[in-house]
Image (cartoon, protein in one colour):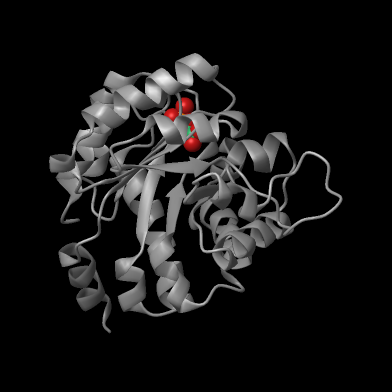
Length: 271
Ligand code: PEP
């Protein structure tokens, strides 16, 4: 496929938008349940053109899952073990997650990569385990400010992708969302410009195109994360190749999160 035809395919390819709410280590049981109930009850079937997923802390997964009776918002976990079971104090397996109704999992979030020192190899093992276990996965990638300033952004993200996708079959791509989350934008109030986001998403899609094939690259969902808020979600979601978002801080307020989810409907046909 020529470059021009690839660009046309991406522009016309319909990808279902995705918005995830990563609660991180926030909420308590009561506020988490109330937040999930508010989001679930107000995100109704008529808006079911967007995949909306909540990622509460581990201890609240079951209660949050029960609070979402509408069936249109899915339950996700923020992490999983790379191992199936065994003597691994504090770890949570894919099977345990599935057992309590989890269908999505985050892998490689920058806070785990940088604050909890998770290297690419561990992220790749967790990614493989999640896929093998039938979970849908959001793989987070992104560069630090220092890496960007050194002109290394594409190289760093490329390495993260290469390592993660080494063992992934083409058939698994349908259950994968890639989140481009520049570390300098996470929780900082600094948002990537539409141009930065477009360029990074193009690079990521280009990687999938060369690792697999252009048709698969045109089909995979790539979302943006980093200080997303209601005021600029629409602008970012209108960027060609941006298929929704992963939201941290703003996912803790039902109104803000729902506004961001509604903004994602703009991207029903990515353009
Ligand atoms: C995140 O945690 O993935 C994130 C994007 O956080 P925030 O929206 O707070 O920057």
